[in-house]
Image (tube, rainbow, N blue to C red; front, side):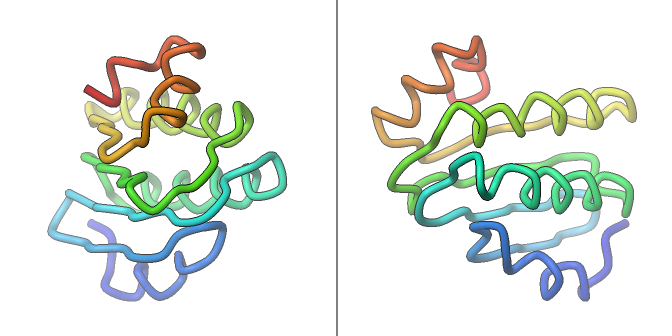
Amino acid sequence: MPSPGTARRLRRAGISRVLVTGCLVRVSLRGEITAREADSLAAQLRDLVQDGCRHLIVDLSEVTYLAREGAGVFFGTLRALRAVGGTLAVRGACPRSAATLHCLGMGRLAE
């Protein structure tokens, strides 16, 4: 199970808020999620799964731009979560971010 300290470690890579409730983690992203932030974001989300997160909700309501590379981070995260019986959901995507997810075949995550 992710520890309360997990929230403090994650406030980078475009992450504005983290709420840990048992095995459920809600991560709120903000600003632009581009190729520049993608590697750091991927590492942070991967750490959550390794720390025991099994159900992840990513809130994009404060994201102003989601590049393909940024959205691609969710592929690896989803794969890691599925390997341990977990789930991933993306919420609050603006139409532009939702279109990026849809183009990458991840539109169902944002429903």
